[in-house]
Every structure is written in C-alpha cells, then in structure tokens.
Length: 130
Image (tube, rainbow, N blue to C red; front, side, top):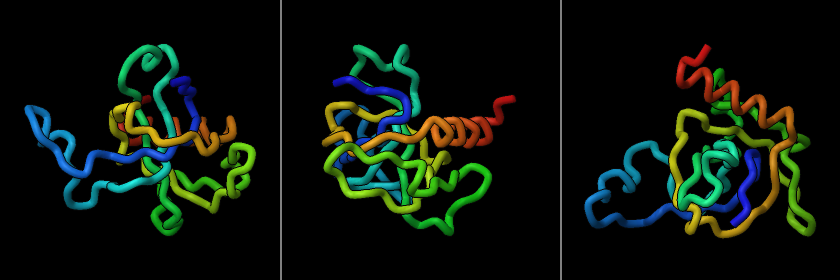
C-alpha cells in the first residue's frame, strides 16, 4: 500500500487482543477506538515496505483543540474524488500510535501542506522536541 505523510485513512484498530502483544494493542480508558480517520505522520522513508506506520486519529469534537490537539478547518482537509467533504476536525497528537497498515480500510483524503506542518508542531509539543 502506498502511504504518504499527510494521507488520511479509515483505520480499524483490533477489537480484541491476544498473544504476546495483547496488552499493547487493547484500547482502554480515553484511547481512541473503532473505525475512524487517522493521519499518517511518519515519513515515507520510515514506513515504506514495512507493515506499520505512525499515525494520529482525527476527531470532529473541535472543543478538544489546544496546543497539542491541532484544530484543522475543513478547508485544510482535502477529500479524495467522490468522497464527502470533511468537517472541521482536531488531530489528537497526544494519541499518536504505531498502526498495522493491513488494518487501513481505505484512503479518504489528505491534509494540506499547512495542516501537515501544524500536526508536526503538535507532535513536537507532545514529545518536547525543540
């Protein structure tokens, strides 16, 4: 699958976990779960040819926006042809996770270049990168 930084995919995390990594995959508490849009944030060099990529979930609960939950106006979310327009959203940079690319259901759009940079700044804030 061809993934690019800034692409938006519908991702379905595992509903149940088993095996040695079960505790790492299960959702609990306030973690995002269920089929939802995720933005690929890892660069192509990191995830090309690998079964995983790094991504952050999107939420339409815009009241969640702050220094590390990046407000993304609908105009900065570019739907693929034939897809419904996006609503104003928030990139939950504090919910960053490594995802299994086999669980990506379909590409639904991408972030504008400005939005991709803004999400990068949100991640820099979360990880205290200067």
